[in-house]
Amino acid sequence: MAAVFGRRLRRGAVTTAVAAAAVAALAASQAPGVTDVPRDERAGASGATPPPENSATGNSPYYTDLPPLNTPVPPTGAPNGGDDETEAGLPATVLDAYKKAEASLATSKPGCKLPWQLLAAIGKVESGQARGGRVDANGTTLAPILGPVLNGNGFAKITDTDGGAYDGDKTHDRAVGPMQFIPSTWDTWAQDGNADGKKDPNNIYDAALAAGRYLCANDRDLSVDADLHKAILSYNHSTDYLNTVLSWLEYYRKGTHEIPDGTGVLPNDRSDSNGPSASPSPTPPASGSPSPSPSKPGDDKPSKPGNGGGSGGPTTPPPNGGGSESPDPSPSPSPSDRVASLKDAGTGKLSATAGDSFAERVEVRTQSASGSAVAKAKVRFAIVGDTDARFPGGATSATVTTSAAGKATAPALKAGEKTGEFTVRATVVGRSLPGLDYTATVTARQADALARTSDKALTCAPGGEFADQVEVKATYKGEAAGRVAATATMIKSAADATANDKGPYFKDADGKPVRTLKALKTDANGVLKLPKMYADDAAGTYLLRVTTVGGATLTVELKVAAPAA
Image 1: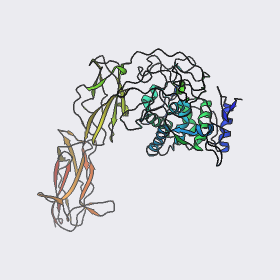
Image 2: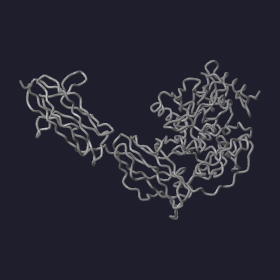
Image 3: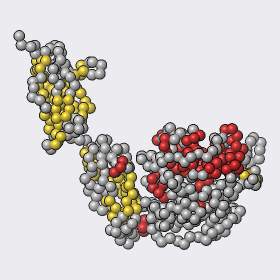
Image 4: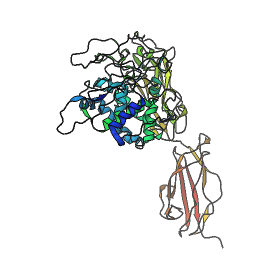
């Protein structure tokens, strides 16, 4: 059995049995069952799917510290302090990010029922709550948090997927940020959790919301044990990982409190048995709370990736010591690191008719501080706004690598049925540089001509029913105008287009007379067939007018008269 220190269960490489026992001690019969659940199927949002081979983190190592065995909130009369109360404290910004992610998903995915305590549990085992809450006011970590190199040496082998843009490694991938996403997974599930226009895996607001959406994939209901277990295992496919996360989930559900950023408890034990592997760094302050120095104000370049915490170990040695390893050599700047600005490269007006492809594409150019082109940088194009326009395959975003001339051209856009304006946003992947926004407009389908498909006279006896229905065909520039909106009105006269109050009429769903029909639409061949028409007792000659978006107009004569003797 693992030793117990100060009412706290510790472990190096905890067995499934020990972890299950810890869960039982924490939650008794209330804890979800701990079983070895099969890996979840590929799942995602907007067509995205978590990588089945690697999971969200690439199955990187994680912290195996277990929570105290006692309740996190001391009972009335009990002394304050102790590891129970300290461990229950969550850094203010980190706690706020988890709760905001829960609120966002309660609106966008209400059926998921994601509790913020699940994000806190995963954040604990992945990065020790962003290294004890060492984040700036916007929620971005003061130093990069990187997992070990996934080179197959004791870990999964994942060759580079991001050109080093996120993790600084152009040979293999590494898990990144407080929620430890591997680059390929982040590129699929990235979110802007703090509405600053950026999607940064090193930002706790962005990472927490992305983790929440990942866990909610496949229409999971996290109030159901089976779905909860599948979600956790999809993050890191290990039964020990499942048990550890469930332990912290139950612990946080029993009570937490807010503590200042940077004062959270640092974890020690790691699942790869390497202990708190860390880069050499200055001696921690006497308080025992190491504080990495923040980046210089105004410096938008990412900090050079070190061998930081999270699944890969703390950024600095914890107060109680622990093993260390030699730092990785500083990688040469990636193409994205060299980008100083993003410029338009001659994008034309973005406009298309509903259902058609846009003739123009967004084209941008990356350049360095000296003004030279930056090749092989990654540019992300994202569709923003209330629209059903999409890139090929129904995608709402696409990542393109710049050419030798530093240019990146977005895939062709296709308009949906929703008209109006939306935005195409271009950003440099892995950087916080200002992006470029392009306004795109979708206009309604149009027709410039209408004609009847028959020249048969339309007559009816008073109080009777017209034998024939009116059928028209809409065209635009000589071609059939399909799915064009139209209106049909029984008008008073050629000079007065207001609806008549007598003469021919249509019937509504309740069988009542109606003389104006809206929301009509031509079929794919531009044909529109109106409903049956009826006549009241007023004899005479009347007019029916059909109009379409684009200005096409057709006036049809209707006669109501008694039949000849």
